[in-house]
Image (tube, rainbow, N blue to C red; front, side, top):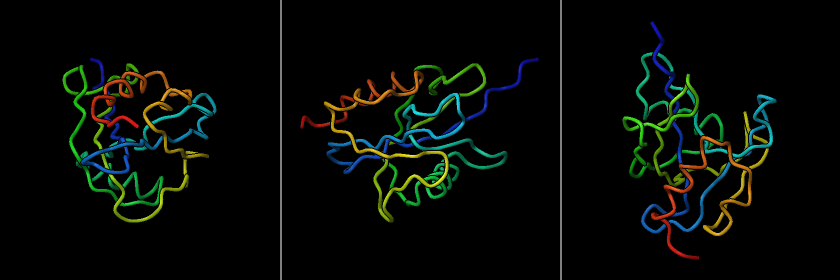
Length: 141
């Protein structure tokens, strides 16, 4: 029997949930095979933990911020985004309500990207379809 994939939760952190114009990207520092690639901040849901609680915990641990969540960007595979055979992700729009994002744990750089700059960084391959799916939510620069 195949184990169920591990659930990862992440946030597309924007400047304004009502009218987003920039998106926060985080560059991986670890593990080595992912280093230098960009992603949406977040992490694994612990056993027995609710996905939204995990997302808030991860963003506080990884970036030092508290956020207000907006809508979930529902993925095309039974509501999730497939990362690998072993991992799937749920992603919500979010806006910072407390703290200033800093790369505290797994990242070495953060960058706010305007719509025209989204592809200026090398995203992790599984995150690229999400980047494209977010485009309609953003206003033109």
